[in-house]
Length: 163
Image (cartoon, rainbow, N blue to C red; front, top):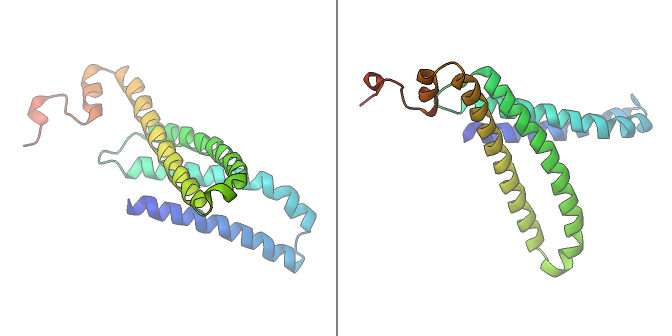
């Protein structure tokens, strides 16, 4: 969990630093405001996708007790990063729509939206991990039963079981 918190903090800090750097470059006159406004929407989406992909890949590679194969890790990270991008657009639309309910729910609107964001983030993490395990299962199952049985954490041979 410490690693997940560290990755989330890094993601937030990097996002803030990119926005700050673009602002400084614009103030110094290094880049024109039109250029920043034209590039920011496209580059921000790519940047968020890459950072999410790397974060999910690191989580899926180093969090489990057993190191999964790199292909399964990358497949799960790609799946989760794509879902993360889709979910972020959906959540943005929900937040825009929820702005009208601010007068009805008051300060609870922020709490509900934050809870929804936490739930959606956890779902993306778990769906990507499940996809990585399914990916590994499909390709290991093609190699043989012994390796497939070991996939779920139980050794395929009883003499390998620990007491």
